[in-house]
Amino acid sequence: MLNKNSLDIKSASKLLPKREPFSHKGSFGRALLICGSKNMVGCCSLATEGALRSGAGLVTLAFPDCLYTSLTSRLTENLFLPVSTNRNGCISFDSINTLLNACKESDVVMVGCGLGTSDSIKELVKALVIKNEKPLIIDADALNCLSEFNHILLNKKCEILLTPHPGEMSRLCGLSVSDVEDNREEIIVDFCKTYKVNVLLKGHETLICNSGADCVYVNKTGNTGLSKGGAGDLLSGIIAGLTPAMNSDLFHSAVLGAFVHGMSADILKKEMSEYSILPSDCAKALGKVYSLVENEGA
Image (cartoon, rainbow, N blue to C red; front, side, top):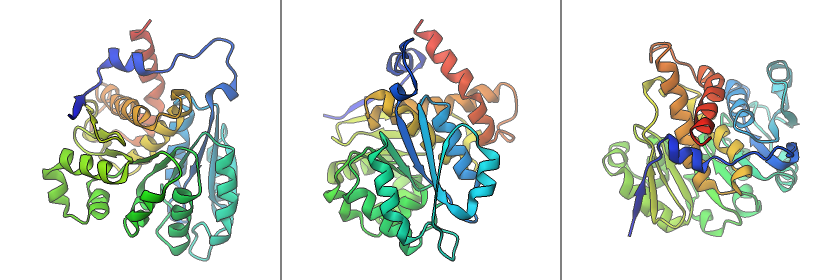
């Protein structure tokens, strides 16, 4: 039987891990974010800020080294892992082993934001699924690569969360976008049942289904201010930042992450028009969101 739920601020407060007073940065885990290409720089900053503002103790951003000057001038609180770049400005084949080694030192890995879909990125995605053993969040371009070889999910060595929008889900399933939108719950439950992965399907009332395909959360927060490029990058970063403190539970990290992400836009709606909300505004509002959620449980 399928168990359907949704969070409110009280249940979100119960889900949010408590931070013990004698903790240190190692207590809150290491997140590895693999992002970016020559023409997609902003996604790196949004994902990184999402992870940092969601509690991860150490966040490492892995990115094509051609972006080094741009990113080091924007970001200050994370670690940097520049890796070799191919002629198209994407991560190259010879960076894959470096990234797999970095996974071993991390508590959660997120891949996909702005990476492109070159052959080297496809090989990277394959390697992360079948060789990496750490919880893995697959988003954006990594999902588009994965859609060409879904079957490798059956050979995974790690817990996986996919975070597609309807277009990406249509490619993963081989269905039209309209079919996905008309049958959102049925499609993600069937996908989770087939591949034993967690899926967060973005959209109005985002759906999150667990890898056992027996529990779905419907997210009730958010508004059209999130309908801008970069919002998904921020969400993936938020989930990555939450995962280590939530005992590497990707499903509940995604449930709470979607709630927090949407609530950031709801708070901003009181201050500005939904037309004008930017993902970077939402990143800055995360502190208010977490304060409200924490205080609800005080």
